[in-house]
Length: 102
Image (cartoon, rainbow, N blue to C red; front, side):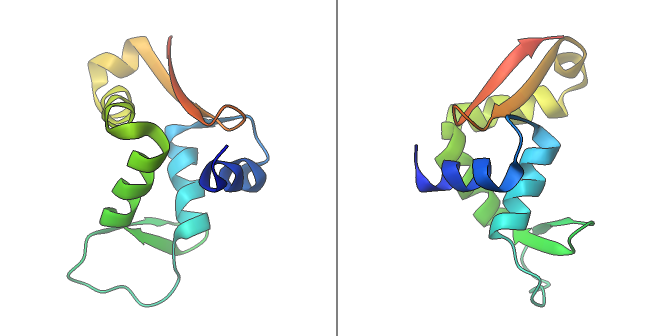
């Protein structure tokens, strides 16, 4: 297991993370609470008030899920038709994203 995957397992304390929880964990672990550079797109976690620049998030997702895995995670979570039939979760023990039928 890579260090990145182990950090997510240790931090989350859960064996399964929804896409939203997975992203929030990445923001909490690798984000910052320093001042935002306004010209750079970012995503933030309202609970922790941390943010992560989109470029860094994309790199983390690619490293953890591969490019194809990242594309599928986005598709399942952002496409209404897919979301009605499929669910995506990240298994923190395996360090893999899974798609299951709803």
